[in-house]
Length: 133
Image (tube, rainbow, N blue to C red; front, side, top):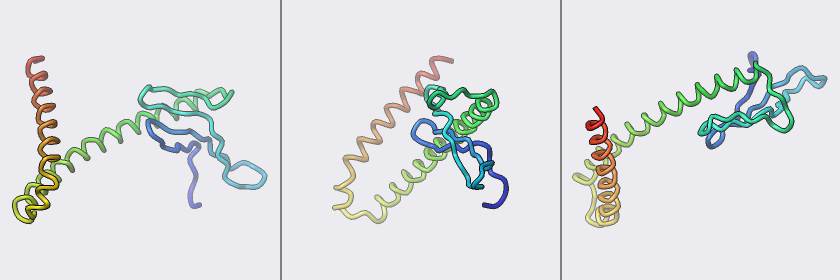
């Protein structure tokens, strides 16, 4: 592997990660990864693995990763919403210009229900924001 390896490796999983300390200082000169903690982003939890005690440096690195990961996931959420808007626009164009009657019959009810649900949520949330101000 080229370059320097990080001191910690985070194996991402649903709602967090497994945290490993990367070790190159062994007799075989192999990369060893020793699990030191489990992170849950939803609950802001850092649980040491086994009977380990995490150092302040460990905790600082983990907290920094948690902060960066939350920011990245928030950006991805907004990007996904913008993509959904694009897909809705492309779906409208498809329905108007290329869809056959059979294709429209296959998706119309599901699309209408999903759009009605989305509209209801958006209208309610907007009303809540307007009445709060």
